Amino acid sequence: MSLDGEAAELLETASAACLSSLSAGRVKSAGVTDGHTGSSRAALAHDSTSRLFAALQSRAGHALVIGDDPAAAEALFERVDAQLVCQRRVRLPGRRVDADAMIHALGADIRGPHRPRSGEAILSMVATEARAAGLPILVVVTAAEDAGAAALQRLGTLIESVPDARAAVRLVLLGGPLLEDILAHPDAAELSARILTTVRAPARGDGRWVFPLPIPRLDSAWRDTVQWVVAGLIAMLGVFLIVSPWVGRDAGAPIGVQTASPEPEEDAPAEATAEGMTEPEDADETVEEHASAEAAP
Picture 1 (spheres, rainbow, N blue to C red):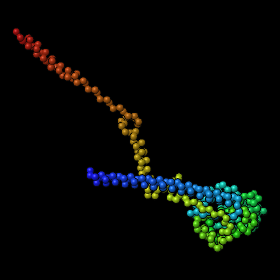
Picture 2: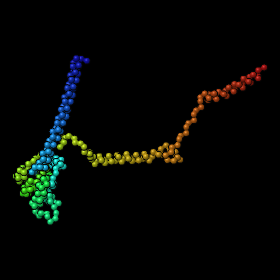
Picture 3: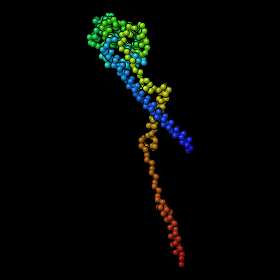
Picture 4: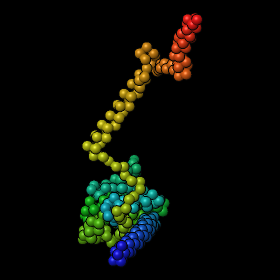
């Protein structure tokens, strides 16, 4: 090999080693960055849930939870709601929320002659009980952006009109980024002023796999193909189980009993056969010798 060829080979080997080292360093750096990102996301989620819990449990005022979508905001709130101790809690969907729906949900268990007639009176009764117990009342609106600024403002106005409700009732609005634009509308200005706590749900997943993985779902064509293949295998197994007792069996033998094949007779030893073949020749020779002896003078 020439010197130029050796130099080229050495240069190629060195280049490959450098590229491998850079790739390994890049992978390691990506892993460290991903780990730090996961830790930061966990810390952010913990801080958000802690602030929301403290605000709803012991501080007057309303709360706003914003996520990438309404489901993300609701998932964050569920973690906090499981730890809250409340006098009452109601949940209203944004599409059908109004003041009458809130009053009906809060006073659903108040019956009999002592039930107040007006919505303000019902709200005052439940709020007074909550303040006496030292516990909050939660009014949670899911997908709150679907309600619109005017409907949300009516809820806030009703709560603010009752003194005890102003201190005891916490209006919790859950939604996506559109909810912030709705609350910035002039029709919801008074409600926005009473929102003292705003938390943001961390992004879910960010392209990473989350375990347990969802069960894969096959398309209808693949599902039909798999079903036909499985059915064919089961049918073949059934035929084999039915036919196998009849294989290798005589017609007169019972099912499951196989007859033994006759063993071949052992061949006579070659020496014995050879001796048997030579015996007649010896006898003829003896007879001829005897006749020759008699004929001699």
